[in-house]
Length: 55
Image (cartoon, rainbow, N blue to C red; front, side):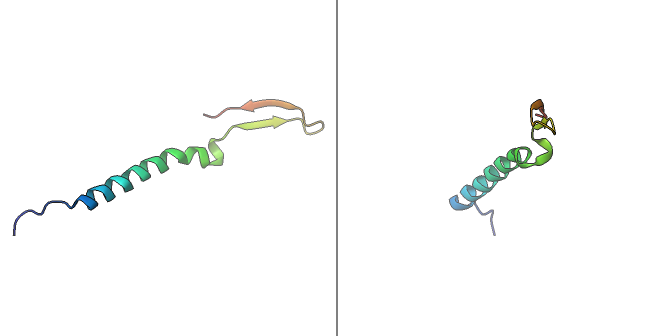
């Protein structure tokens, strides 16, 4: 009939899930191939020519 207070475990669970979501979203660019550096090599001798840094 009145307002119910939050249980301690529900506050912990919410903060745990929220922190994992934020950490996971921050790591997506490092796991995606389109955000990684690209090395260019000579096709004949495999000499490193240039590294294109995206981030």
